[in-house]
Length: 276
Length: 290
Picture 1 (cartoon, one colour):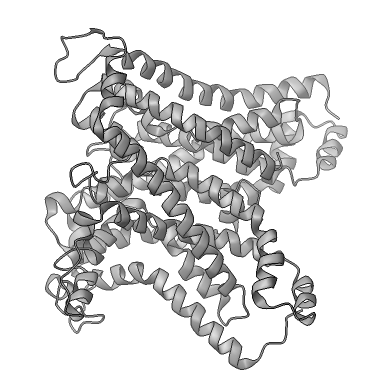
Picture 2 (picture 1 turned 90 degrees about the vertical axis):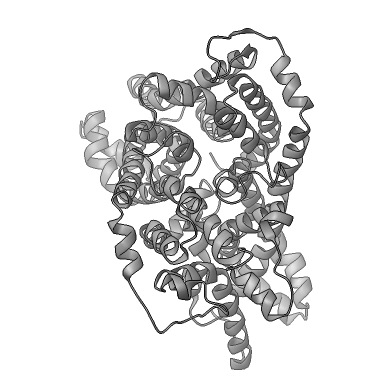
C-alpha cells in the first residue's frame, strides 16, 4: 500500500528526481545533440543546445568511411560470438553445479569468481606473445576466445543462480519417466531455463561489447571493434566533434537499447544473485 | 538424490569450464613468472638470458611505481566513496513516490552502458577540452579562465569520469535493495514520530549494508583493472601523473617493449591483487548464497 503523500511533496520530489536524472544523463544527451550539428556549430561559442542547421550528414559520413562498418561488424561478431561460446561451455557446468552439487561445488564457484580478480595486465604479456605466435593476434577468433574466458566466471555464476531456482523435483520426475541425461537437459531443463539463459546472454553481450582492455591490446586494425576504434579516434583524426559524436552514438546505441531491456537482470546478474 | 552415474556426469559437465579457466590462469601466469626473471626486449631479440631479480628491482625502484600504486588506490577508493555516497542519496530520492519511475530509471542507468572509450572521449572532448569544451564555455561565461582538467588535475578528472560510469550501477543496486524494505516498518517509525534522519540511520542504512558491501566488492574487481578511460584521455600523463599500475605495465610491455620488466610488474600486480582478493572473497563469501 502506498503511503499518503501530499501533492506538494510529490511534485517537489518529482522535480528533484528528474533534475538529478537529467544531470546524470546529460553527457549522453549532449553527445547525441552534437552528433546532429555541423562541425562549426558543434564548437560554437557560446555553446548551442539546439541549432538551426540540423544535419544527419555526420552519420552518413562516418558510416561511409570505408572502415567504420567493419569496426561495427567486428563488435557484433566478437560480443555475440564470445557470449554464445561461453554459454555452450557454461550451461553444462552451471547445470551440474545447481542440480548435482558436490562437496566442493561452493569452493569451485568461489574459485571461479576469484579468477576474475586476477588483473588482466598480469597475463597481458603472455597473451600478447601467445597470440602473436599462433596467429591469433588481431583476429576475431582470438578476441572471441579472450573475451569468452574473461566472462566465463560471470556466465557460470549467473546461470547457476537462475538454475538453482528451477525445482529439482521436475527433473526427478523426468528421470522416473526414463529420460536420459541428455534428453533431460534438452526437453525439460532448457525450456524452463530459457529466460535465465536469455538474460545471461544479454548481459554478457553488453560486457563484451564494452570491453576495452583486450580489444585494445590484442588488435591493431583488422579485428578491432568499436571500443578500439573510438579509443584511437581523436588522435589521428584531429578534433571533429560532430563526427566523433556520431561515431560514438552509433557505438553505444545498440547496447543502450539492449541494456534498457535488461535492467532487472543487470542487478541480479552483476551481483551474482546477491541482490534481486 | 543423485546416483553415482549422475555424479560422474556432473563432473564431466563441470570439467570444461574448470579446465579452461585453470589453463587461462596458470599458463600465462607461469610464463609471466618465467619472463620476469629474464632479459627480454622485443627491440633487441638477440640478447636474452637470466637476470635474477633485476627486473623486480627496476620496477620497485622506479619512482613511477609508488606513484602508480597510490594512483591506483586513489582511483579505486575515490570512485567507491563517490558512487556509494551519491548512489545512496539518489536511490533515496528515486525511492520516493515520484512521477515517471520507469523513464527516470532509464535515464539514470544509461551511463553504465556507455563503453569506456566513448565515456572517456565524450568527457575529454565535449566537456573538459580547454577551448571547445562545455566546462570551458561555462568558465568563460563566469569570466574565469578555463580549467585545464586533464593537464592540471588528471587523476581527479579520471576519477570523475569513472565515477560517472559506475554511479548508475551503485544507484540501481541500492534502489533495488531499498525497494525490498517493507514500508510498514518505515510507516510505523514515522507514526511513532521518528525523524527522517533517524529512520535513515536505524532502519534504511542497516537494511542496505549487504547491498553496499556487494557494490564495493563488485566495483573493486572492475576498478582495479581500469584501463580504457586512461588510455583514451591522459595516456597516463602528463608525465606519469595519472599512471596506474595496469597502465604502467601496459606501457612497459607494448610501448617500451620491455617484456622482462613488464612481466615483473605483472607479478607484483598479481600479488597485490591477491592480497585485496583475500579480503574481498571473505566479504563476498558471506554475502553470496552459493
